[in-house]
Length: 72
Image 1 (tube, rainbow, N blue to C red):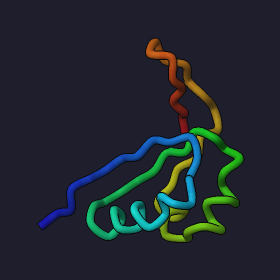
Image 2: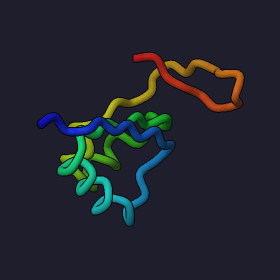
Image 3: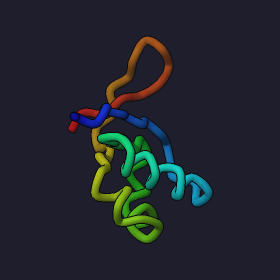
């Protein structure tokens, strides 16, 4: 049976969320989009499992809903 897919879009990784996100990776096919590109090394230090399932914003695309998405 295929795992359900989960996409999490966030600005940064709070340390207290690491156990939750790692559990989600084990349970679902989980991917992360990080909107703050300065977080790469911080995320790698906190969790290699999360880092390996992450995409990092490099070029922002403004949306009509006042948040930014990235193109990669």
